[in-house]
Image (cartoon, rainbow, N blue to C red; front, side):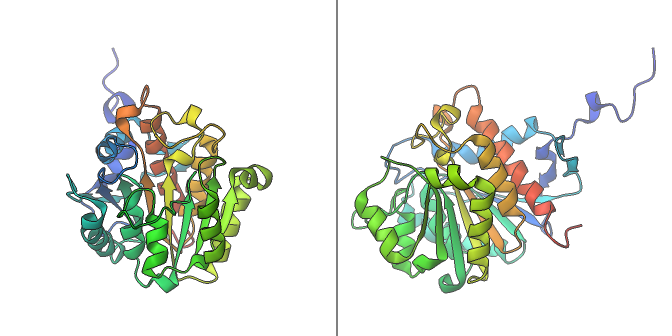
Length: 306
């Protein structure tokens, strides 16, 4: 019998989880924001950050299709903000402050929700709203009124009320029969750049995302991107209560993630609305894990990256 191979993959399997740790000088930082309160559909989005971290153990650091390896990339894991039984209004400052501190030290902050209400503090974490851009990949406008309080259905409306210019916002993947005429009118009147799923099918996700990045980069110093996982077609996304049939193909979701993370003005991305209690056969857990690998792959492709 041959002696054990010291580099045998039976003994040295390197997963994406091995990239994460206490790395205060890493280019990327991960912050969990397990917010569940304030969801229009009650669920367990608070479980998502832990499930995503655990799922990374099942994903390697090598992209077979492009030959890209992530082994040299370190990721600082900043843990989770404590948000148990906390409403979105009270979660705002803790999430904003934690994300802001990370944005000051790291090139990219990866915010793992939690429900979509974490997008608002994530955007605020990047500083002056007038110089901040926001891209959402979402089936919904998230423009519900705020008179009943902050919810996962109104972070974009709340940001408009906070002073984020509508012209600094691009929304991609909006679904038919999932929004209202009034929300559409609010978006149009605010100057938000609105792109439906039909637009994505007609132009292609790469063109759509590239145009959005170019437009916002010309007017903003920094960009935040909300990846609401319910933008994915429901047949491929059983673990997102808001997902609809006819949504974004999951491969387009991954393509968008890598393209977006490669842009140097993108300083924060979030993943929201993944409810592990609704997942089937780890479909969305693996989708979220792959999304994170694509984000790291994009970061590694930025100009000047080592």
